[in-house]
Length: 248
Image (tube, rainbow, N blue to C red; front, side, top):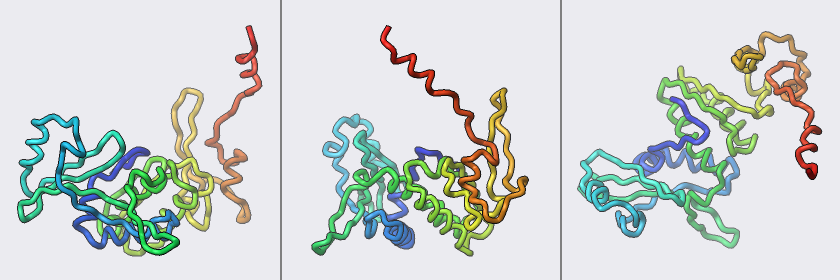
């Protein structure tokens, strides 16, 4: 399963609505990750297409109102709202969406739309299904740019949660990242850290940290940024840019 930098987990709302373990897992993780979210809740609303999708063609509206059981449709709006339309076992057609519940200092809670959460929180929410499903599915997840929009500590806690879980079976997570703080031997073994470097012809070469002799006290992130392991860009002289701003 390949998860790109902009990927959204299509069954996020459906799984949260139908799987109590899933929504509890997501809420606990987001709370412990200091996102400000106390829990995730699902809300069921009437499928009023004129209200939520005013520009939807009439034929599409009619088709959606006639979906078969066990069929679900993911819908989104230009404003960033995400919905799931489905027919329940009793025949009722419902429109589902998620909200994030925040605890107020004065007491009580307030529910906010997911689209109002930060990009990093939404990115984490779309990654969490891979973390949960890895407990029971023997599947390889490839996450491209895991650090996209996320604080370095969030990327780390995600990996730590996967590595610390002894129930992950034979699954695997492969990530790409530009976050040098993840280069930590307390988190990853040397043979689990790989670098990519382009040659003069633009071909990419892949090699492992285990090919290097590394002092036990060396901070890998700093060593990488200092160029000890290659795979860093060769930066030119930016002073030449000054000529671009001179008046002609």
